[in-house]
Image 1 (spheres, one colour):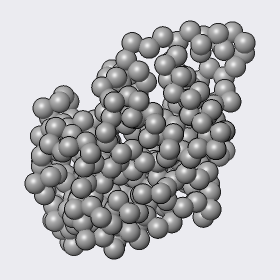
Image 2 (tube, rainbow, N blue to C red):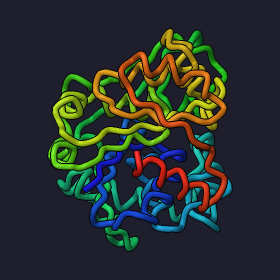
Image 3 (cartoon, rainbow, N blue to C red):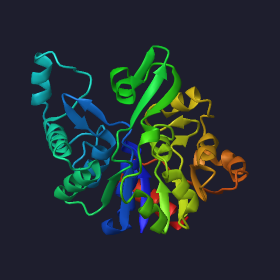
Length: 305
């Protein structure tokens, strides 16, 4: 039994390598929902959808999100009606969000909805939102406080980051099955996701970090930082804005209170000694995932660790 904590594109790519070695029924993925946002009256779950679409084999591989070959007729018409045009949802993406919103309004939990969508797409992996409660990630910038998706997409992550607010953090609980999965797993893997707004958001849900300290599982994380820069996304600005060193060491320090093993890229071998001083075992490997063989190779390294 393996539990993985996951954010968006980087995590999804790693998980496609992991399921080459692990039966889907033996894998639970706890996904960040701090990015969830209401758009066009619909509940959109970007990270849950990225992970689901990727594992189902239908993701747009070019950008890492959305559905491959999707059309944008609905969005185009909404733009003609003067609706917001900064967030791209394809027509099949709209279908998932329409269903999600319909079921949530009917009283189903986000966990139940996520389970239905993933099952309908042929997955046997258990995909769990980190919480069924209302949790939103906001970024404090020099231009004001904005929802993370607005910061990332509309503002193209250009603003200086002054801080991050997890709104609702004190009011939510882990979704049913999250803590239980962590406590009963043989391994827990922190995917190479943004350590502040993806993994950090998951860890901020009361009870999750505590369960990681308590579990007997072997806990392994993959650094999303290579040679002082993220492979994708605004992690560098977020880390810098929170006063965290933008390096593999900086990320390892965020997880050091519960982690056993930290996997770093071969370009960061000079960081190995510093990270070991945090009390962690360090594994050096090629962590850049360019295709399925490199994703699978990284997954094998993590499993062997």
